[in-house]
Image (cartoon, rainbow, N blue to C red; front, top):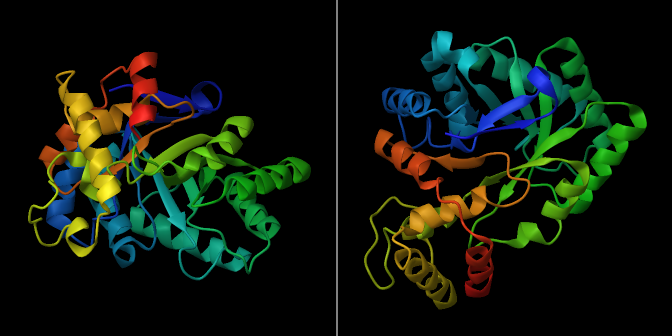
Length: 299
């Protein structure tokens, strides 16, 4: 699988074009099932595991730490803090120690603020993160669910104070969810920040497994919600586009993202080894400029 890098030389951050989202560990998957997915990801060449202290109440990090063993050095671990409890200096300092312990590691490759904390000045959060980098507990820092304006503000503060700056931004992005293109993607391009899109399959709509009017399996994200007709129509147009080229909707969803400027790694969850294999294989379609323009018209 293709690898992409941020930063210079051997000291940069490297990741496979498809990363593993670990939000199912400790929630939908027990430890034995999570371990099987982790090992399948390693065998498939995935080198970025994205988790968070909040996933599974900490179990996701724990399962990863228990499963990796000596293969810890083969991958980059990205985890997040601040989904609840905020991003104060005290919270950052306490959260990182918990994550390091659960992950059974001495360092975190990418430490991300999970969402903006309006109650804490960004200066306080960035100063705390800079201290972690200087201590060697964290290699790089990033943000998740920030707006373009918030990314620009954080970047300006880091530059002014001489602190470490965000190298990645993690936001939802898919063929059906393209709001990131209005402000976040341009802000990242200006700052040289890599994008980690999550929900690349639009909660399953872009897997090709679901049909309008059909009954969906219980327990899936789609089974709990309503899908507007306009979104179904877009899915069907995209599926026809892919089939006309001998490809699947899944391949289109992953490969379209992989072709977008600024993408560092596409974060995709999985609940089985088979899903891992399909996700990795799906990212290999090299779309032409004409095909990308046609996709824009269809969506």
